[in-house]
Image 1 (cartoon, rainbow, N blue to C red):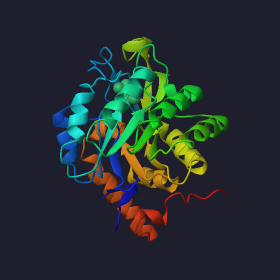
Image 2: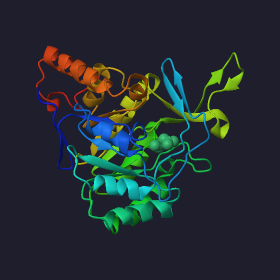
Image 3: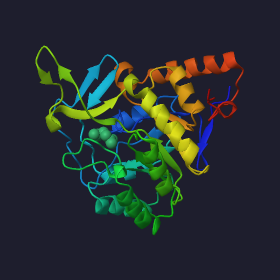
Length: 308
Ligand code: SIN
């Protein structure tokens, strides 16, 4: 069975990626991703200009149907991740970068442009957990301005990580902006921002920063993730690939992401719950579904979800 997929000419042996933020912050974690044979590529933690400790603990809480987190972009700073992706790796890398401001984002992209790295970069416009910083990609004008500036000097392949959208007018709005630029891909969705989980016994929220408001992930966000993949696939230029992220717990969920139009699929919360062994299970479950349906490659069903 052929699980190969490509994004902007970069060939991946499987469609599986780690979601940025999950087991990709340290050298040891990145090494463990490289050693996970079912992973098609490696995404780094979103790198900021300066190293960050992230938000106060507790900042992750496991839920029956997913998770809530308020990590706040803990990372070692861009030089570490830019150095990491410039080394030889057994699979393609995606360098994720996140600015604390538009100026930061632009400066980070300049650093990448000035480096020898020629692989994929992903500009994270959607972290919901940085205190005092709204998610950029909910502001279409600001997003357009950043992309205009970046595209005035950036000549390497890059895409963007988006927050979830919830209204058809917003899908139209963001697609109109993104279609103006030579993006390789969009990664959709980041966590569903600013949820609130309450421990009824303790009469208390479960994460510390932002009064307990945090990003929701895992099974409960699958329909939102699929809607964003599908809605954007219907609206974006054909040459903008889609990395579907959100809600994957089974091979059927991976199949559904691809059926809605995803070129690759990332897994976040379920890796925390189950460890990196999850990818072997997901691959087997995906292959079993494909075999049962007589599909030999991802192209046989990608984007072909039927309407009633
Ligand atoms: C975080 O808060 O560090 C995770 C969210 C993101 O990577 O955008």
